[in-house]
Amino acid sequence: MELIDAILLGIIQGLTEFLPVSSSGHLELGKALLGDKSVPEESLLFTVVLHFATALSTLVVYRKDVGRILGDLFRFQDNESTRFSLKIVLSMIPAALIGLFLEEELELFFGGNIVFVGCMLLFTALLLFLADRARRTDRPVSFVDSFVIGIAQAVALLPGISRSGATIATSVLLGVDKARAARFSFLMVVPLILGKIAKDLLDGELVFENGNALPVAAGFAAAFVSGLLACTWMIRLVRNSKLTYFAVYCLLAGLLAIVAGTWLAG
Picture 1 (cartoon, rainbow, N blue to C red):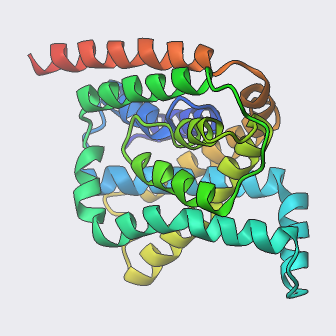
Picture 2 (tube, rainbow, N blue to C red):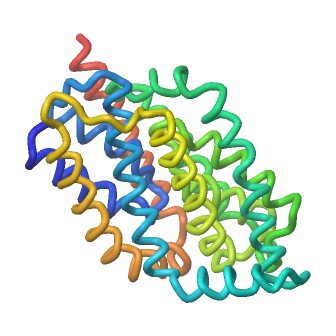
């Protein structure tokens, strides 16, 4: 992977992580357009590293919330922060199970199949369209909601299905208001990504070969910086804008990906 390509992909990750348009899907499309020939395992590794960068940027932006939650947890009391943390843990279970038992099968979807990515973007568009028509969106996230949202997050491990789009749309369809849905969506992924990185480090899988260490590091830095900038204003955009706008974007991007993928394969 070339250095400039890695930086461009890092910027794509940082800008698209916080909008419901599938950052992993855009990474796969970007890699295909840039002619990236990584095998699926290397492609997924690069994707995980970039997601780690935006997880860190999320921690920086939400540092006050995270600090308050951690402070309340160490008091070992039944309070709002403790319940919120338990909901986060509950939401992680479906994706964690897939990561533990279906990781090799998941890697196969990260090999540049942009027709598949396009189809998943169409699915994301449908989810966002339905969510924008939800009537009752005024309650907090319950424990049952957390697990259902976690299932949506697990499905969104597929490239082209927006993680934030799937989790926010599912939350809204369950009746959770957009502000709470956005906060829960952005924070619920952080421990999952950190856990994935820790697992890969322990398994010795985060090894950069063929001179890829520098491009991956550059991509990480680009994703972190662009994620910091994007998170400060795009979260507000997600909360206040109609999800239909993003649905239309995903629809157009999905159709273009399907057409381009079919043309390249032909």
